[in-house]
Image (cartoon, rainbow over all chains, first blue to last red):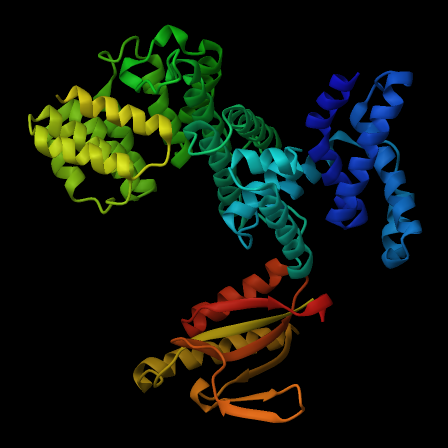
Length: 400
Length: 115
């Protein structure tokens, strides 16, 4: 029964907070009341069984708890909110839950909040992750994370950050901010820069769930589909990405039979849908690049000219040096390491470990071993990730 | 809710007239639009920060004076516009228009408890 409540919690927490926030107009009160409702579920459901609509039960119970709280606490003499809560129907329409979920996502991902706060709020309020779990995932003390969340919620309240879906003219930019938050969560789980390995797996799963949720909420937004496809295709390689000893395995050396074919199938389906619509965006093109890798039976059979062409398209959408760096990796496979190195040298990425790592590989392929060694050492000095450091050390050793 | 739009201005002399005049035209047009929308509460342009004086009452009640400004830096608040908006997005939209007109960054600060 505890498991049933926990499952309901993961599925319903964010939706229930979203509905309650709209009805009572107060995020803090909504959160407290929904937590009360889950505490009640833990007591009640073992006797009554899981109700036919867990989310309906949670929302109704939370609504009654909110009314109790408003009536009990003299400081919260908000008759409007109480009246709205009392008048709210017991039956919650699915469409209205959907709209409220979207409102809450856009509130959590409002660009007036710091990116780290957007990520933390999204995981806490939409994902229902505990403050302790979020703190572990980002390797910060729980008190620090609690303060970050409290400060962000304080800003939402004091600055009057609205609880609504942005109007069509603002929607693309604001959706971009929400997608960026989801991708940040995914990358934090995927690249494992720090923190507890188990919780990081949970971050990837949560990002995928959020991505899926955004696609359901905004079915016409191709970039939401593109992001979901991108995450599915990268996450499909999770089992092959580390060996039995937990060491990093680079893409060309991965055992492709360990890739998750179901996830790849879902990702490819989304990519094909995007290609048909022909309104490319950053995430869609990145997903298409991952799709080229996903369909190659072996590393040697990868269609590199197609990947270079996709990076050319991506560069027109996102002219950042990081994109140019990834393009150079593909150029090395088509035009050789010398051509790639020439492109690489022009990029202002001295602070990035990946720039040095790619440079080291290209120099090694050109037989410039001493320079390659210096570049790989520079890469190792620029990453805190222990697995990456060991991987770079092995490459250094392989240079002899 | 009421929001204060703080105009963040670099210290030093104003730009030459050929640059300043078109900016001021745009700023007046912005103020007219704000007024017409019924969203203007109050506004003021400030004298240079170097003209400011710090006044501080000590625990014994004596008042200490010192040359200002309070905060060191190369930029200071050069003016403020108080607007009425339904929520932060409304205030941010006005701030965006003002920033384009005046070609300076704007800090949007809500008035406590909605003003």
